[in-house]
Image (cartoon, rainbow, N blue to C red; front, side):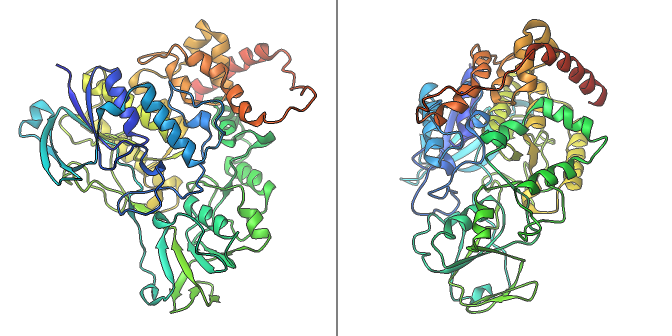
Length: 536
């Protein structure tokens, strides 16, 4: 009999969780407390506590080829950086393609998850659910549990002195939807993460003045990279990583990236430059912020010292009066209120998980977290890769290391995280897309080994090494191999270019000629393999 798996949440992580269970012959039952799929990408006009949602204008920060699920490319007609309506449409297309909705019990909330009485031998879980409409509860027993509830649910609301006495409007970005109602207002936005900057840029077009308050400043990254290509496709590249590793012997990579980011605009001149390198904080991605600063509609301010009834005093002693609204872009606190703390205990957004998934102390590895990461890259393919691994662990096809080995790695990773990133609740679950995908795929057996590819398919090996590390690369070999992966890799740039071709130009565009391309690709690939072997 197939093992039963409870999937909690039908968002960006829950959907691939269902599919991966089905692919491995498991029996998933997904519990979703709303009446729809998509999680925070399902836009609603009215905010709901505990249910995060994008702004009406939100555009995703990762390009479509980098964020798609590994065996289902996003349609070529879709823009490279998609508005939230396109992201939701893609989720629905994915669910329809693989017939996932039949496994989902909508408007059903999970209220309790605990170990069964025989957990030490069976690894089973007792799950209690509640029908949101009727209030009726129901008890279930599952062989495994997949936590796919996300980490953008509960608002983090700091207690600034005087905030309770402030007479203007105060909301969290969790509750912000659109700029209507802020026309000709003076607005203070606290926090320079992506939500804070997105709302500041949007409001700066209608408000009389926007003040963007930040404790540390931020490096601002662009969606649009060199020659108009999606920036994340240029950076997430194995050849680029090898070159950077070689160059680091001559110049700090931090200095290189800071110089590159300052070529667009001087972060110090714009009062944005922090006192840490570009990758010591989660990237803030926005193409419009410098334009709004240079025209004066956004003014960068330091951290808030205190509020008065009508204004805000900042830590540099400056004061802004007649403030109409304050928006707290101060992040979220995540946790699992339905799960006993002895299983997973989240303290100040810090959680100790092997591979950001597995609680090391569990006697049976039949419960894991999915998407509880803050990646330098897209979260969707990472969640999918996590699900692929977990499904095979539950089946018994993959054996995880011992508890002691897990704890050794967990502590090592947390120590590295602490050394790399500035201290902040938003930096407790950081991972690098490329490195993390490689780690998990090696554990699962579907890593695209360049040596094997070079012997079998040199052209594909060159594309895997020199091209962007799109999710399809993790379907070219091993468990879950997809026959369409090779073609998806070779046609990915066609899907990137397609939405741009909206007007006939009347002349032919001559593309850069790649003379002797495969010849120098082959030699450089050999060099790269040697470098990776030496410096791994």
